[in-house]
Length: 265
Image (cartoon, rainbow, N blue to C red; front, side):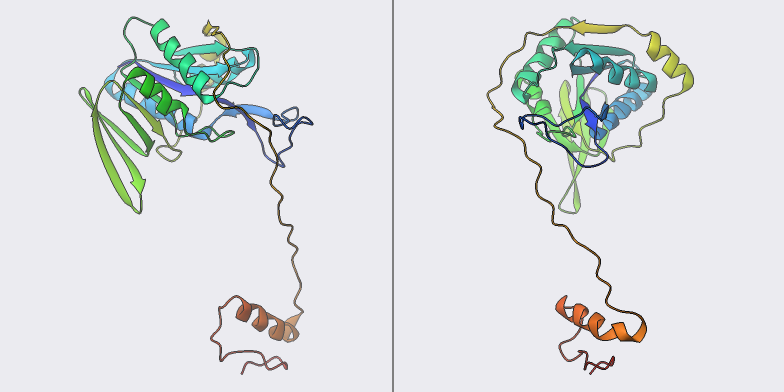
């Protein structure tokens, strides 16, 4: 089975998020880039399915020329083909992104991929939309929030967690599934894999930019409440203040309170 996995190039933000002066983008000048964690798990799941059933895994991303680096990272894990929907760096919304992916599916081969995988949501925008929109445009069933996948002939079985239980689904292929981090533990790239990925040819498709129905007004970083540690005291002298704090938190019966001399009444 030939599987298509859609991934996204996102900034690695290990500290404070900084917005550009115009409020339109996250300032990534001091950041590296990676693949969203959910989508890294989607690649791993595609590789495992292909290893069990045969076939290939194609990894696709939409982004600037530099996004080829993230495709090579996925090729180093074992993916067979990388496809870059190359843009000029402008941000594409979910409607336009899904449309570009759907168009690329038709260009990549005479037989559409029977299974398309994606991350449940991107790490930067958290839109939850692209996978669903791709499935709708292709007229396929879509399974979201998936934590377990099985192939049984021309059927796809999937499970997701909901309300402390596990929901099970079974649909006919072709289908689209969006997976969540935790469905598996992604493998590490091997040295031979890295060398192969470095030499691999990336298929480049240049879709025409299109405005999205959603228009961004601006970005802002939410204010965080600064909290400082408070020293209540030392030794037995700190007991009254500790009892008061525990009482305020509702962790002590109402009859138990400090009497001011370090003992509880």
